[in-house]
Length: 84
Image (cartoon, rainbow, N blue to C red; front, side):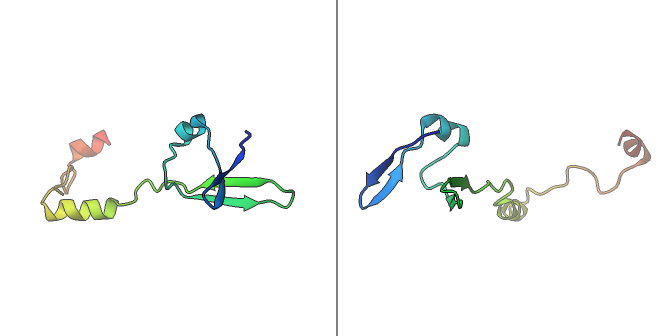
């Protein structure tokens, strides 16, 4: 894919094509990492999303609100055990 370097204020940047923005779900402020490889190539990677980020806070909040009831009983009888 080709992009043209443009002037942005006193810096330089490049425009990301709309298809790439949609495919990667990019947003303003998305962190990226740029690495120059010895042969002059530029490799751009983005930080992988942390799927469970913030879960600890959410579960602590639910516990304080009393919303942390068990879905399964604390014990399993033989009938339930046979289903597993």
